[in-house]
Image (cartoon, rainbow, N blue to C red):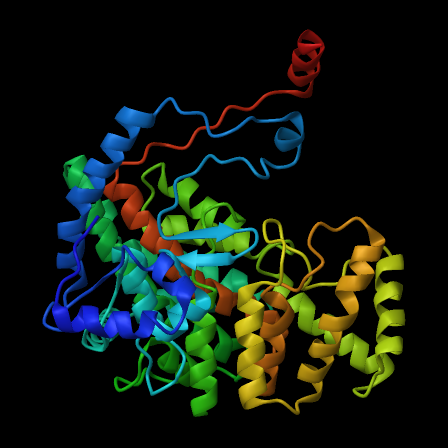
Length: 471
């Protein structure tokens, strides 16, 4: 538990908290800080010993407490629903959705600093929140933006490694290749080879993590411009923040697109530790692989059709609806098309979630963005009709635990509206965002000294024999 610093900061927080009753519950333990305390690394140096003692006490006093029973269904179902991983930066509730250090997405939109009044939260602010559990001031976020810009230097050999691939290679393949090439500069690897106490592991991990977060937008925008814009690359703008700069380097100057990128990076950054990319990053990192190796592995998981690649599938499916039925499709025509998709053995992309049992809050905030900036866009109106049509059909089908839309159901339509029409690239955007969450947790993995991950596996014969004995 940390103490609130600064009467003025506390007063500002309380005035905002009073706007929403649920907010007081989720931020009661959060700390705001004075604008003079700008260095993120120094904040972590204070927090790490406190959290190490907290973990030590938890293990000593409650290590034998049972968290639940494991069933054969869980073993056969990809460990779904098992509580077996410590992930400090976010928690996913089946009904409430994601909370970043206790804050919901709407609360983050209210509390985290923005680039302009009533704008979307800056991703740098979320990074500060994930690492410290504290709501940063605008001055702290600006200082972190400057630090990330200073770290955003990519060696030429990274671009040469990407250029060695065919331009036709999937954008995620090119992106992951670039991240692997960045690994040459790993500070953690250098420190480990020289010999470093385990208690200090988190510090070179911090250096790698922040440098990786700073550099991935440059690598990702290079991939985009290489594939889709004839290699006409755009340099970083030192006057812009993280999300604004990413939009700029991709080639989109619109202030609304910059706002969308700030929102996109923020809401896609983390989704607790059980999803494929987050779990992969943690698993590989538990072997003391450095953040570059860990994040590259996570990207390869994100590239799968059942994970991050789903966002490209949604837009392609929506465009197939338009191609066959036109933009002014009625709800009845849409119902017929949805049933046609399901009866062909396919799924309706963008609906359902492995954990959530309600509409994804990340979908909702994107819908609010669309209502504000593109209410008359035909594809957005189609997405709105799908929101009304698909859940009742999936409920009627009876095979889906969650018939509601997830984050992927909306993001492609927003990106398409502002000119980023290449759906094949969308998962790279997801990857840039996810670097913030995965790298934040990797720092805490090292700070807390979390061990090598090694779950026990069994054979079908073992399960059959065990169940016979239980009978």
